[in-house]
Amino acid sequence: MHPFESHIRNVPDFPKPGVIFKDITPLLTERFSEVIEAMSQGIDWSQVDHVVGIESRGFILGAAMAQLKGKGFIPMRKKGKLPPPIIAESYALEYGTDTLEMIVNTKAAKIVLVDDVLATGGTLKAALKLCERNHLHVVSMSLLINLTFLNKFKEEGLPVVSVLNY
Ligand code: AMP
Image (tube, rainbow, N blue to C red):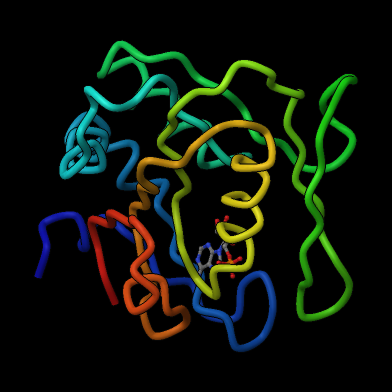
């Protein structure tokens, strides 16, 4: 068992029935710097200009990774939070759709995309597409937890680094 696992709470039926929610808040409290170091491994940082974090747990992790590696940070937010000019990408949820937004970027750059949990991959696929449309080439994606039984990121050869894999 990975030493981080005992600091993650599995909360059944949250936020809806059937989902086992991975609560990483105890891990952030007890092992924060080790988590940031682990999530930063396996990436060629010499190829990276900035870190993009997905709201909101991706902000906590991504901002700390950017600080550790001396890179800039770019927030990717939920709909309606960022001022114009923005670029948006919508994606399907079980019921309805969700939208991610970024401030329009004109200068091409290479980035690492960060979030806490990769589940079905809908969020990360939309985030990936949004970055590429916004002239931000994704060198690597870094996740704390990859629920590999719910997505095919590895099989599809996408550049994903994850610390805990289920
Ligand atoms: P998905 O689009 O299905 O890959 O879901 C990813 C987003 O939902 C991430 O931003 C996660 O923070 C959150 N999420 C999905 N499943 C879980 C889970 N079992 N525990 C905690 N967060 C989750």
